[in-house]
Length: 387
Image (tube, rainbow, N blue to C red; front, side):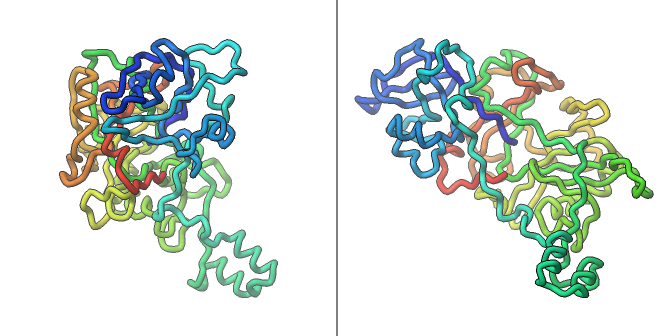
């Protein structure tokens, strides 16, 4: 569940003297706490707030003497003298003549979003394709006879993987913003559901209409699976494009190509988690799936929570743990953000996801859904933030 990069001009909400450091202050901005030098800013000042996972360009690192960012420029979460500091505060650039609160300055300042590396379990982009096999033959790397045999799967050594055209209806999942960016989006007392956020790899699966073609025969739908960014379409099996990626394995394990036939035009979103997926493995020796959302492409809308759970129960598909259902409050969110995972008590919780019981669209953020991330999760060592 990725989020958009938001680098805004913000007003300093409060300045608190650091209880354990004489030369440090804690700046409060939109629910974030950021530690700076003493008296560097005062309440009401306009500043640029760079959230965790922002990447600061070299020229700004040099300008502000940000030595701790010289490795990769990535802004993170740290603990200084027992207090959390999330993100980075910078001065408003002089070339912005009329700075306004809420102005997005990411492009102006050259600040980008950190892109996590691919998981070791993701698709091997070096798989041999028909085109690569053809180029090998043209360049004299293999004989014409071998090219023909490999093309028609007559030999098993280095069989190329057939990658079909992508299905344009196979939507990626919603980008989910941090609740600290939009801490007034939910109102006290409104009915919400809060689910545990699992640490794994986003997955999606669906039966969707094939693109119209004179070569289409038989079934008008095709089974599509993939991660958040990668789409896999077409036949499955050892000679298909799927190879041995975790999304194909999990789809096969849960028989999604059979179960989802009864729900064409519905996209099922889940998290693949467990052994080898990320650094938090939930005590598993294998991979598992937990579903968290369904989108009805017939009306291009995500299902209300009750309909989502009804379909998952009918298909006997496991869902992410429901932590809370009831009236919203900031204290409730804080309560369910931290602690241990409800799946595996020996592991920290990544955080939680908050959404209304019935789907809503907000003019500021689009779909009304936010995430809240655990401080223990952000501060853990040797984390693996894969797509």
